[in-house]
Length: 192
Image 1 (cartoon, rainbow, N blue to C red):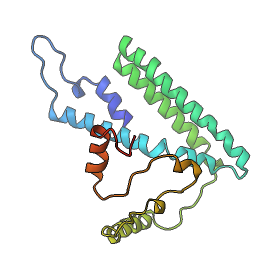
Image 2 (image 1 turned 135 degrees about the vertical axis):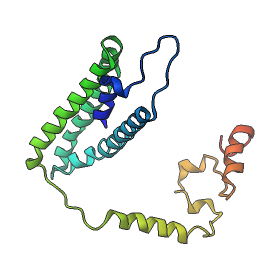
Image 3 (image 1 turned 135 degrees about the horizontal axis):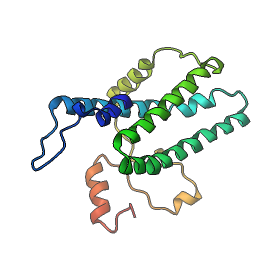
């Protein structure tokens, strides 16, 4: 996704022409390239950023060594800060092509490092189909959609001495009316 995004900044044919007196809007092809690259970048971020923590934690048998993977998060946040400052500064002062080029180069370097070390990684083999769990949740939700809910608050909360000091709402099926309207309009609501 970052490659076509970088190409939109480099190639004139993927950008709208520069404005003089009247600005011409981008073509449908230019919009398509932009939106496809944004979608691919979003899928890539969503599919990799949040699975890396579990991937790294699975590499260590000893729970104490699993804590060392916290450095991954530190590096991730430092990279976010750099991307929010240095790369934006480069894009503003030098050009968009250089800014996207820096990001693309960093991604290529990280992929190469990842692939070089691939032989040392412990791979956890998937068991069963991932769609089985999703299907179970959907089927359970369909079966339980008309299930009668208990109005007894103790069925939903762990009761102890500290919780008894707080006021809790009664369970009701009118979420919008009781919750949303109750917060904004009712000062004596149980949601204080």
